[in-house]
Length: 102
Image (tube, rainbow, N blue to C red; front, side, top):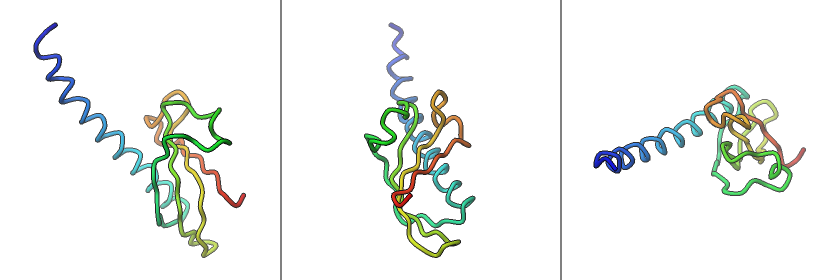
């Protein structure tokens, strides 16, 4: 094995992780702005809720959110599925929301 391979891995893995989490944060913020909502709380879930478990791929991220909906002037809670089934967060337009109260 070439001696530079471990060094490249040590450099590329943190860069990829930084990009991945920055990308998902930008996707959540973009979705909120497009839907006139203010993010109050968001956190990544390691396991999707039961209703999304069988339809979520490993390349997608599930985020639990609490938002202030400016159009209805109320606080809502739900889940965002970020990314498409095959492309994951590379597909920045693929954001799906599931509300708790729906």
